[in-house]
Image (spheres, rainbow, N blue to C red):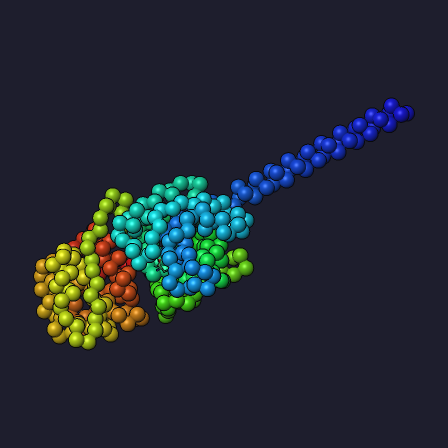
Length: 366
Ligand code: ASP
């Protein structure tokens, strides 16, 4: 009886042990499974205020951009582990006012290489806010993947009270790992809002709600750990563009002249003399050309320089053959693109053609 009892007891504790081991292995497997099911999001860091530091916690201006490395940015948001398998890479470390065409080519090539890997589901790029809209639009036209690419920044340095960087980074990773963000083009996400690269612009020098798509509207929100999309741009992007930067080391020189009362030809002449292949005129009103600017622009065009009429106003379509006879002058209009984005599209257009009709088509396509 005793022997029998003992055997049973042994049997029971053996069964218990086995059950425990099974539970443990199931929960380990479950944890591994959950981890494996999380999206793999690569964070490419480029600098900016999101990586900036100030003298103390109330310093929100006069701080130094681009001082904190990517590993520290990730470590500051341990919650990221719950929503994605993240890896960081420092691509460069600059304030975004110093962004150049070379930086863009390097970044776009790296993004394309990473997105071609099956183990990368999405990319987040941390970036200074001053030129975030330009980098976003450059990538929107040159990334060859439908996987999410989200560009994020912050208006307050990492050392500030209520720094917006950590929550913006968290939301950006969430968005980059979201299936809903696939095929939406390059996205800019700050302040719980999702904007399309083509339409977003910085509208305020210092407030955290600075990024707006003004009249055309943002794409959606991030709320309660979920991205909500409500609209999408009708303009082509990423895999649907005709631009290929994979073999390019340099982009054609395109410069911007700004319209104002009493405008002179000095800036235009200097830009043409320094080798500009294209000029964007951020004209007053509907891209109007001042009487004294017509001759210099026509002269530049005769030298082969492509002239694009944009507007300094910030909203609306620049009407072809409206304020100037573009057909006769052989000029191009920027449609709704602001001057800094028109510059990007013209640079890429010039890598394909010098034909103004073709370039105009591109301005109505992207
Ligand atoms: N000057 C900074 C930059 O663009 C501003 C910012 O990131 O908010 O790098």
